[in-house]
Length: 216
Image: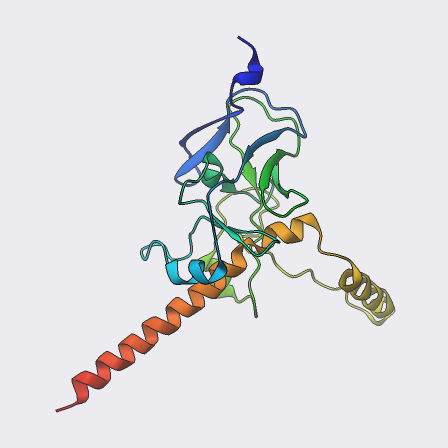
């Protein structure tokens, strides 16, 4: 039987975290392994659903598209939702030109049996605190592991001699169109906003309950 009809991947328990996706056979670099599938929803719908799992509020299967829609991988999703994060990934996510689909692509040749990973590089609004980094702790264990699944801001080179260079770099970055990778990282914005809303709702509920108890 030809390998063309056989899937590139299989799903089984990961030694890193929960389920994982593994290469079912040797995968050449540049291969489109699988698409990240699921029901398309709005950011408002995603906010209303969060947290999907109250016991694990920092985990969802939401993946934002540059078109503004969000893929809910937990609803009619594909096996791609089980791909774990790594700071030294062997795969990457690529959005199609229409901004409607997300492909999981092999960054390098991957041997049969290897677990598939891509760098989540989760983007958060506001300051990235140590507490926030720990809440999104990375368990990949690679030598280059940054300790968190969040995308950390790049540190500017210190020294007055590099000031002009840093300003030039900032200006160039701001003038460029978002890169493919930046579009991919946007997937957690809905998650972050939803998490904030969930916390605010929880605080309001506690305040209301305390107020009711205090009344004679």
